[in-house]
Length: 319
Ligand SMILES: CC(C)(COP(=O)(O)OP(=O)(O)OC[C@H]1O[C@@H](n2cnc3c(N)ncnc32)[C@H](O)[C@@H]1OP(=O)(O)O)[C@@H](O)C(=O)NCCC(=O)NCCS
Image 1 (cartoon, rainbow, N blue to C red):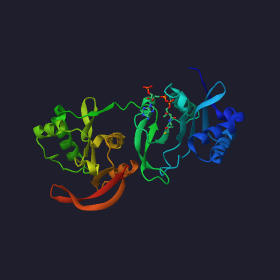
Image 2 (cartoon, helix red, strand yellow):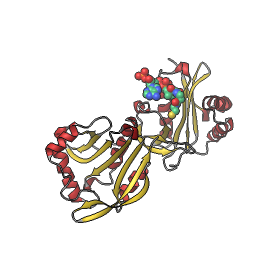
Image 3 (cartoon, helix red, strand yellow):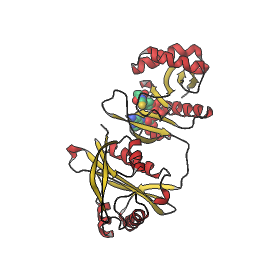
């Protein structure tokens, strides 16, 4: 199927009908599109930028790149926005072509990381986007899903669901990780479970509960778990993440937390809880970066060795 993708910056003659087209699809005031398209044509900066897919002179799809798509995380910028394909033209790869074109054009202008806000699950993944975190859209009653598209970095770390055979290595990892850092929550003895009990609990996971392991060169470097409570009406889950001391601050905790939040969202979870050590500013910040809010302190929540350590209760309301 033949169609062209046009940078509106190169076609000022299309400005008015492009603004009209986006307005007719999204119901946002015409002036908002007209103003942004005028800025794009003026060309003072790479953002904003607007693109249209055109067939036989007719606009059949479009997408924009703006600084902030009306949400509270202004540092996650710029944002791809307003992606739309006419109904009779869907499922022919037009959205994919628009996304690739916009990302390629931004890259030429020195912007290699882009974000977008959506309620879709499983659509953007097919075009190389990853779920990143939950953000609060301005005036929205619920949180929205934020995706990221960034240059592929080969960290050598693979993330997979834990299987019962991983039980011994996970317990050894936790003992090591916990012994090696004062940031974590069980202390030097690690998690108080036998290998058999751990293997059984991994085998029993499902329906919203799971454990992930991150491995590098075959060694576990981090693990994370999601436990959605069985009482389905409550739709609540709890997450935890542990990263080996020597791998802290490499982005692995963020990768794992993104996965857990995405999986929880897709399992129908409404609220996610996490309790992190009150003295662990990095963990609190990581949760906040993923949309969690710090609610209150749970005095003496963690009992490590002979010491009771306060925990910060963090909460992410997803729906
Ligand atoms: C989402 C949208 C842009 C996709 O446009 P499109 O041109 O049909 O997309 P593509 O042809 O590139 O991809 C289509 C594929 O994605 C799949 N797909 C479409 N919407 C999907 C969704 N919500 N979740 C998962 N997969 C989806 C289709 O089934 C198709 O898969 P197939 O090729 O295996 O059959 C279009 O449906 C649309 O305009 N929707 C209304 C506006 C909208 O939701 N925009 C996104 C705002 S964040």
